Length: 260
Image 1 (cartoon, rainbow, N blue to C red):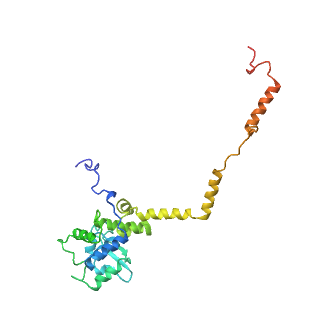
Image 2: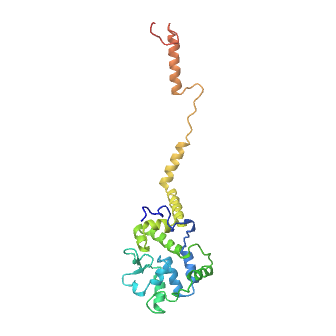
Image 3: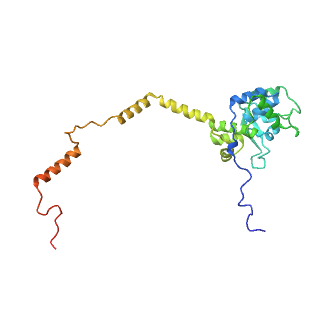
């Protein structure tokens, strides 16, 4: 037995490199969907970008029975977090962005009819390589962490639209993990801030106040003629005149002192 943990001073292997973050806009997501070769790939992409699923583990674990069409919800099985209490699955909304691609695949089921993703279940399938080809076919350049940044993009969108704990619960992580690894500052955030400033500037009341303030700062002090004295100078002149009229006492300039 040893008295202390020899690994206590070592950092964990999982770090956060935010320089590899990439936010995929909806406009570029549409280009990628158009470039997908079949319905299964369109659904794979949609589940990652708009469902926030971990790819490939949560994609391959998804079954048709997990989709609650009546309540517009999807139960996502999570092999990565199943060893945590309550982490074996989570519910997410059946987002409108997912619906057309789920319906497309449900109308033409393939394989065993149990799993949602059937064509790319083989361990020999390299989703990353195929996805890079699709991205280039869409006229885009592959970004770092291809699937992780799709999940990050969706996590960022949800955090901007819903309370943080709701957005984190739907993606199956804590707000601490989301803040460290997923949530991003996007170009839309900057645009929204600039737009807000522009609208405030166009406010007539605010403009009137600003102009009034500027007008007060631009008021020039009144000019005083050579024969006029400002109030302070007048007071000093009066004191000097009083001293001159009374004359100087026998004690001179120095203050009187007691007799030694």
